[in-house]
Amino acid sequence: MIYDVTIIGGGHNGLTCACYLAKAGLKVLVLERRSIVGGAVCTQTDLIPGYRLDVGSSVHIMIHLTPVVRELELEKFGLEYIEMDPWAYYPILDGKQGIAFHRSVEKTCESIARVSPPDAENYRRFVEIWGELNEGIFETFLQSPNPGNIFWTIFKRNLKNVRSRKLWSSLDMTRQLMAPYGQVIEEWFEHPHVRTALVWLSAQSGPPPTEMATGDLAGWNAMIHRSGAKRAKGGSGMLTQALARRLESDGGTIVLESEVQSVAQVSGGWEIIDQRGEVHTSKKVVSACHVQTLFLKLLKDCPTKLRKRVEKIRVGNGFGMIVRHAVEELPLYHGESWNDQGVQSYHSGMQLLCPSMNYLQSSYNDFSRGLPPTEPSVVAMTFSSIDPTLAPAGKHTLFTWAQYHPYELKNGENWDAIAEREADKIYERVCRYAPNMRGKMIDRFIQSPLELERMHGMLRANVMHIEMSLDQMFFFRPLPELASYRTPLSGLYLTGASTHPGGGVFAASGYNTAKVVLGDWKRGRIPTKNSKESF
Image 1 (cartoon, rainbow, N blue to C red):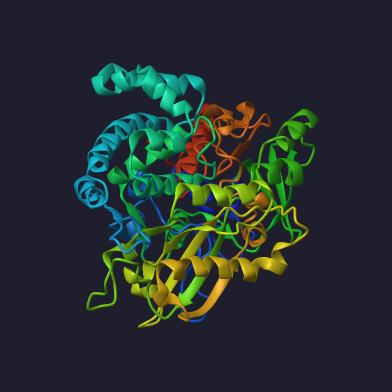
Image 2: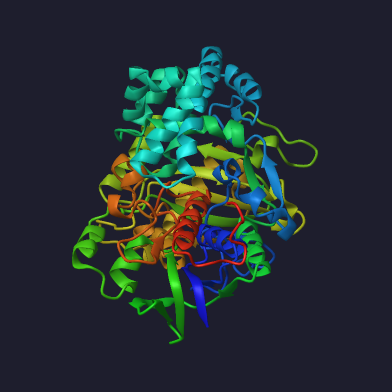
């Protein structure tokens, strides 16, 4: 069989792209190397008996700012979201009640005011200004990132919106965008606890607080008050399971345990060979795997100049590791008390376990020397508190993401040998904040940087695929000549975290790539069964 489009990789961007193409009437094949679809948006039941464990991302934020869930009608295919409110919580070690970040800006400001009344007002203005700015930036995320598109989008928005025009013409806002996000937060806020909470939230994309031109990593937090943060009921992977069901309902085909070995251009299209030796023929190919995996490993006869360019893309050295715990109870932080159900409202959110900006910097300093952090900074997540399907009755899940953990160690150690030791450090950080957790761990699944690479094909354990720095964003991501989702080879396209707008549960890359492929398809005058269907 000759397919119209073959997608290499069944992560959420690959599946999103496949769904839109199949919806438009194309004959679509998805090849996934694992035994389950989802990539890094995946939930497994075979790791700890009785528990549903995410093996990649857990919090879904940015996808709710796109039309993907609505347009693909994913709720009809089993997807149900649970609001995380509050969506983040910063516990304080000195026994005072912590800071809760709610969907409501007012409720968030009330929580901040208990710690720092001036910062409550600062936060209100911060959300208003950076939210307006990022609404404009977000419009550029849902289209191919060439300079014309991006500048025209901002121009049109500014033409209609006086507030937006004032912000984009402000030299001081430009300065803040080009500044390190740590500096931006220090300028906006006074209290060290407020500063630390926002810096640790902003650090989740990878760059350290001191990196230039990262100011909007701080500002982007304002958008969570617009989109909310949500959990897919049953686990993060319920998103990709729904996408798979949607795809199959439109006639798409998914082949599991089909790791691609080679991709070659042939007369009339493309030939893809998997590890079983099966040959798949397709008119077009969309690669949803890592950009370097495609060009340096899979693609036959890759142009020499392009290969050398791709080799030089900065992948980085990873920056985190994850431990999935099965536990007896939920963390009780200093300054809090149990309710009748043994659950607190903050258990719905990302719990920010980082006592100070200096502490976070010390974690990064160890990372810079190629060492695992002596004192890791941690985000704890306890979603069984709002979704009892994740754990047996009376038990809970505790997911912990920690930074900064280099993939390549420079002290002679290796991750297979030290994974348990480093996981112990992470759990100890939880116990330091919540002493009730000592002795409450039942079991755990450790995803060291090396395991992240093995499981998900994330080279060097960078969960964003490649560094999220200004020189590799927008029309520079992953390279200027590849930024439009097209490649120099006719009929070969890119999608996924390696491309604009980058990593995270977003689906914007898959959405954008589908638009590009359909546009090229129609310009090629190759009919589809639903050729009049709008996108």
